[in-house]
Amino acid sequence: MTGGLQRLVEYAPAGSWPAGEAVDSVTLDFDARHRRRIRLAGDGGTAWLLDLPRAVALAEGDGLRSERGGWVAVRAAAEPVMEVRAGDPLTLARLAWHLGNRHLPTELAAQGAGALLRLRPDPVIAAMLRGLGAEVVETRAPFQPEGGAYGGQGGHHHHRHDDDHGHDDGHGHDHDG
Image (tube, rainbow, N blue to C red; front, top):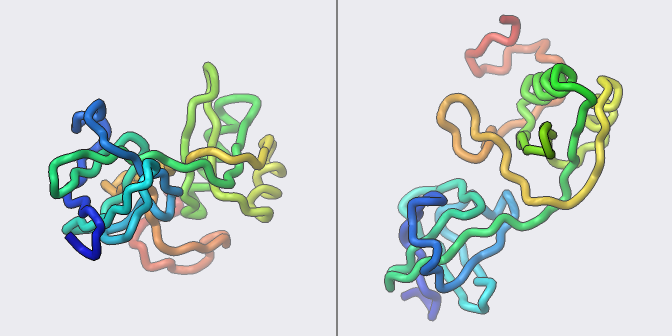
């Protein structure tokens, strides 16, 4: 034990741990859910030390096992986001393409029989999306962006550029085809 904190030493994805046996939960925003080692305040008042062998992108419903054997549930906190809607699936796909082309962490979420896109608030991006026919609404909701096609977890693409890719961004992927 470290300074009176109970250590959380093992990660298990949602559905692979006994959620009914959770002794506590931690509610974290998106940035706080990508960690290896950090002090956490449990929703039940317990102080925890997340102490994993490697950084993990935690998601709603994941579990963390205490060195004492109990489990702690991960909850995604509501945080400021923009929800992007379109009148038809083709427009929504076009909007998603523009966001992906800018490497912006984006969540794809169900909305009734349709879908919406969720991303962090950005007035420049909101104006671009509206110009492309989107309805953009600022709200608060849990945020869990897509992890990417190459096995990335939780949408962690650690650079940002909002230009038209008129430069070599050093990624080795082709934006033209």
